[in-house]
Image 1 (cartoon, rainbow, N blue to C red):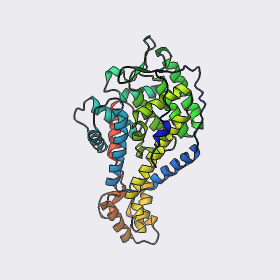
Image 2: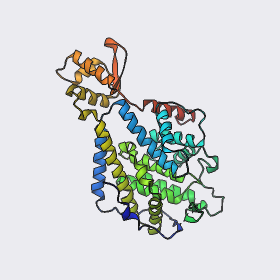
Image 3: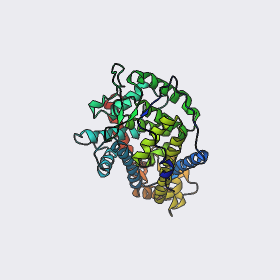
Image 4: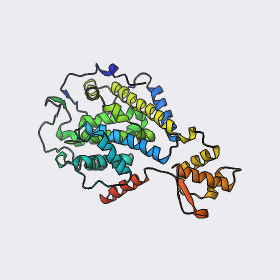
Length: 383
């Protein structure tokens, strides 16, 4: 299945669109036809992705592809000049814990996005204004003109407008003087009310409202899309990180922008939820298809090795041969040791030590990346 973009082409509002102010943010959320079936399929596919076990090299390649493509599409939309090949190279090196030598602004933007998308530590719900400002500040630190980490100023009385490539006004967001109050109302809804909805309906709503407020001078799209991905993961769709959602979401810029503007014009979220759910579902289907081709559990691997792999993935920590022996009843110590060493050779496990002191654990190809992200956070005082 591919996304039928034709069903969204008529959703083009009369431009420019002006945001309508809200005393309170209490959205009337309608979901499209067959939303429940699509939501259930996405959850099923998320669980399926969790069951796949790949070699370290295969997993690294597929995760690198997913992260680099998502970050590339999100930043390219806002003018980052790096091509997909360069973003993939930066992603690969970042995930190996290799620092770029004196990265320039565009490369620093990619690295900072990767750090945030790896593990947005301080963005567990409830979200705070400080957390949102911190996120924007880090994503946009490469561009001082965007005023990283600062809301649009209440003292700035100019009318803030969004223009297209030709300089024509296409959207008039919240006035500067109302940004803080509307952001506080948005945060109240996200923290208090959104958990009562299916996250596949709530995420598009919170994303659109954030974009409609447009709280920053620049970097709103990049910050909002990061929040969208974080929200999906925090609300139970953890394996959405393995899906190339952004390619579908913003690949057709005209439809993407038209639907966002149409939602403001019509004051109705149904078409936006329809579009975003289609994008998420298609990206999940693609991910499952790609990961299934590399799944070790679907290979002709013996049942002892499969059982060890499943337990090692669940256990996560270092374990001994004796511990692994307890996972597979009736299999000798020598056979377990042989299987462990075979799994290590194929990159599914990693090992340290020798003979009886040898220890094993499930291979995590992003361990270096997570440690690198932690060093970045420590350097800026997050942890």
